[in-house]
Length: 397
Image (tube, rainbow, N blue to C red; front, side, top):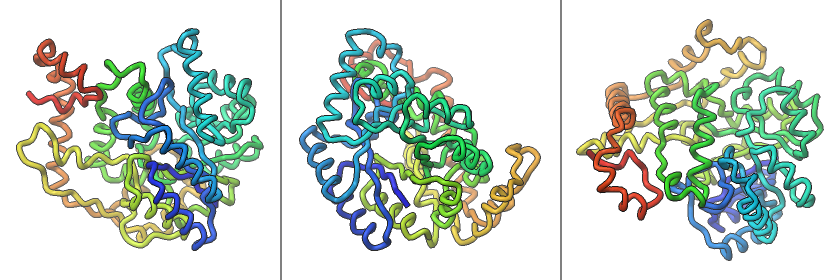
C-alpha cells in the first residue's frame, strides 16, 4: 500500500509515520502540503491551514526525503479568475513554481489543465498529479488528462463505489491511480464545484482583500444534510481500512489521507488504521470535513450546545461494500434503501442533541441568505479589511 498523507508541517508527524510504516510493512509514499496562501492557491482556505516559514518547510521536506518519502506540493486551485493568462501574474506563477522546485518538491498536484501544460513544458522533472477537483469520473476524462501530461490521477469522489468504472479506467490508462480514503463529502455533491472554487480563492494571496472573507457555506449545507439524514454519511465516498484490498485488486496504487488542518495524533491514527487494514470502534473518528464544532459553538447562540457524538460501529459494516462490489448499486437512491438499512444497523446519534445542531445550522444559514452579515458594513469595512481572513458568519447581529 502506498499512502499519500497530508502534512501539518510537524516533523514529529514524519517520524511517527515512518515508525508505523516499519511496524506494519506499508509505505508512506509521500506527504503533501502547501503554504497558507500563495499566488495560485491550494484548494483549502488559508484560515484553516497551519502556518510555516520557508526555512521550516525546507527542513520538513528534507526530513521527509531522509525518511524515504517524497514530497508533493499542492497548487490545486480550481480557479484563478483568469490571472494565469495575464503576463504580470503569470510571471508570478512561474516564480512561485521555481520556489516549489527549490523547496525540494518531487511533484505537484494541479487542478487547472493550463497549469498542467505549463509545468509539463517548463518543469519536466516535476511529477504531475491531477487533483480530485478535476472530477475525473469517466474513461474519456482519464485518457484526456493522461494525454495532457499527468503522471497520476486522483479519481473523482463520485465514482468511489462504481467498481466497474474504476476497472475500465484502470484498463484504459497507464498512469498511476489514486483515491481519497477518508473524505466524507456528500455522494455526488451538488456543492462540489462551488466548494472547490471558494476554497481555492480563499487561499490565494491576491484575493486577501475580499476572497479571504470566507465562510464554510458548502460545509454547512453538507453537514446539515447528514444530520437530517444520517444515511448520507454511509453514502459519502470514504473507504474502510478493511476494504482497501478491493481497490488494490482493481489496480489502485495510491491511497490519500486528507487532513492538513488536523493534529499529528489524528493523522497518525489514520495512518495506523490504513496500514493495519483494520479499525476497531467508531470509524467516524477517521473522517475529515466535519464542522460539527462550528454548529456547537455557533456565534448566534448564547451558550455552546452539548457535544454531539456520532458513532459508526466499524465492525457492524462488515459486508456493507458487497452490494457495490456485485454491481447492484444503480446510483439512484430514490429506488434503493441499502444505505438506510445499514445506517440503522451501524450508526448511533443522540436524536435530541442532533435536532439542536440542525436548528443551529439552519439559523446560521438563514443569517447568510437574508444578508444579515451586511448590517453596518460601512462601519465595519475597515475592521474587515484589517482582519483578513474573516468568516462572515462570525459577525453578530
